[in-house]
Image 1 (tube, rainbow, N blue to C red):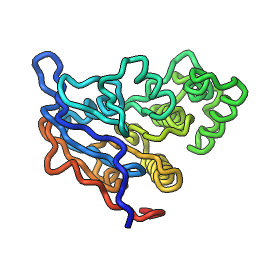
Image 2 (cartoon, rainbow, N blue to C red):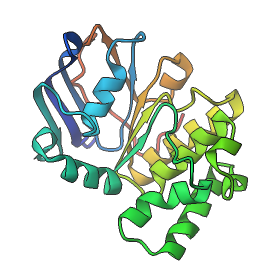
Image 3 (cartoon, rainbow, N blue to C red):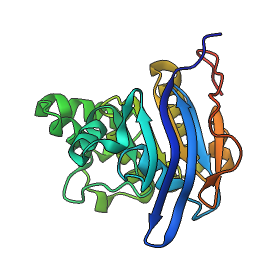
Length: 237
């Protein structure tokens, strides 16, 4: 069996908010095409770790690598560009632009990257349809339910076909059926496209879709976060 390729790596990551420590020296590796669930109690540092790995936050200490590149030394502009091209981010509460329609929100990353408006809208409509919310194309976030906003935000995170997808409680606002649909799409991306997926969740059912679970407690990994999960090509759950 071929050894998995490390895509993301963190070493000794420390991050505090004022005098309150959120991460106290986290080490982990994530393989290309792996689905990794980051779990733990509220306030343990899950979202902070996700944001550091995605380049949204920079650690106070430690190193974060994306492939051979040390991400934490990049400028904010370079990290933002990476999130428009190779990283997709689904925030816990969607964070859609309220003035834009669903289709415009989904197309936004493509437009910022220089894609033509017609091509971007076509890709946005296809993304919404794939997640079962094609009817949201001309609705603004204020006209959507929380679950609809979350699926629209996921379509936006996926529209650039990112190499890595970072998700924070991706099913938190969804009912069981919609949650299963979203999780099924994430598994499909990992298996068919080789997308690396990081899931922050407190839901045992959601974590069950992952290849591997990393548990945080008080800003530290509970156990060994360095192992790469063996995964048979084409495996499903």
